[in-house]
Length: 324
Image (cartoon, rainbow, N blue to C red; front, side):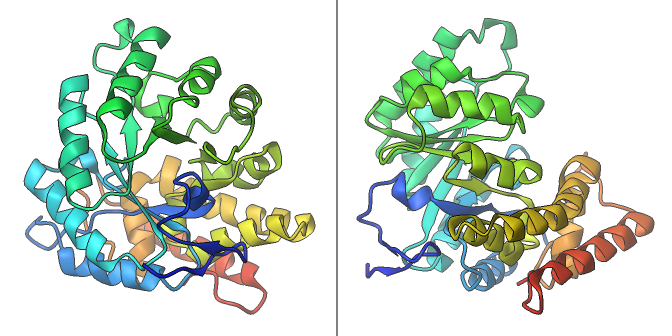
């Protein structure tokens, strides 16, 4: 696969260290559903082809935003195979995995790696929450990494799972040769800073990324090397421009753009959830579509608010489109 120009002006290629390819903005894309509730592979492929032109560093399939919990094994494989065929050369392709047991997670890791995943975003097991000590989590992630054919990215999203990976555990796991990074979606910049301190920052072999758009700029200032942002699916250029401005040391512009990102990010995550994000995608010219029950689509008033916030976000690009 040939090299291509990265958004930081450097060359990136599939032969680069896994953590190096996680620097920048990655999109944890949604799963479009057709009128009958089936996975709409055509819409997914079209979305990825449009996102390929926005300067993003790569993609995450089957994450929380992708409604992984609502998909069966056949559907998950369809999404991985469809996306793999459309992701542009040189862009990272990570796939979310995370059964409740270590054995099941290892089996899933091998399946998606065989279908083309270049890395795995591994969710914390959480059903037996009281038993998920830091030692249990460390053993689980290490076992998955030992068995995985591709590098592993830890996934910390305690607001969904009720289980958090402690900074000390992150630092310990960062020494594993097949664990190349962490996505921290907690939104806690102090906690993320402690992860960076204990793990030695964003090292050549370990990438620390935020999964919370509301603290994207603050996380970059703390030392994060990029982000995996759900809101970026609707406003990819805006998110990329924040990263570019930060790398250029234009902090005034990066902060201005962050202020534009925050309201739309809040609307399509904490306020209206995945239904809100899919509505934003429809409004921005992508294929959003429906969510699967028990998730709900936003009402007309919410859609009008999302449309207004998208227009305001577009104005942040100073004459350049922030939406596409």
